[in-house]
Length: 267
Ligand code: ATR
Image 1 (cartoon, rainbow, N blue to C red):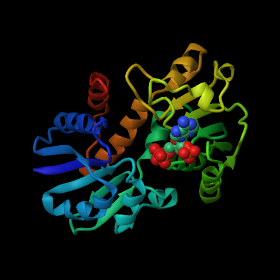
Image 2: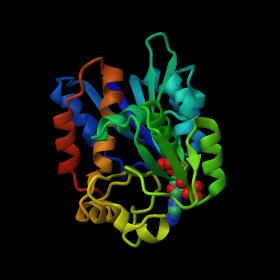
Image 3: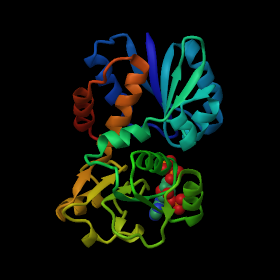
């Protein structure tokens, strides 16, 4: 048996196991399994170091482990090192742990527009926002505005990666929500985030890293106004496909993965 997994705290809500197990089945890797590993932060590093001997080939890291995943690795790709966070660890045959960040290329794959020359507004300044700003700037975005509830965090992000901090954003071709606003039923994105619904219309693109049953209120409103919307499930799928390819050296069966995440009622 060869194992893959996702470490998070909590991790029960993750759709990665159902998505990756569908992928493994679709490509015929019948003796591979992808597991959810609930790991408290204080157990992360020691557990990860023990995984290769237990038959693991790779691990996804999610909240709150993405910085720790980079720190535990023996080597990192330039992308993970620049972003300062890793969502993908690969256990190489010689025992080395290699960190990568597939959130950045995954986001670019999921976005259905040419990024070169566009203006983008990134909401949030956590790990997901860092990957997004890195990806957008590397793809040639002309103007990347970063807004965060806590301004100092946005300032740190911009100092590390580029873009510019905004308090009152101007409208942008692409609006990307990386905050957790929208996750709970009671969330009101147009109150918590500096967005005006009437700026989201035909010709604009709105992407939400949050996914939840029935979609998020931000995307529902953006769609109603004629914007092109990108669901967090598509972003999840694209980063997962890139991780899968890294571990298996096979092309990820994206249709099987998409089918699995759309079939599964989110908890
Ligand atoms: P991740 O690694 O997934 O990006 P994170 O580092 O916990 O997660 O970041 C969460 C983001 O959501 C932050 O930008 C946070 O803003 P703060 O830096 O001010 O905490 C943002 N966020 C969470 N709840 C929010 C709310 N109610 N309104 C606005 N922003 C919120």
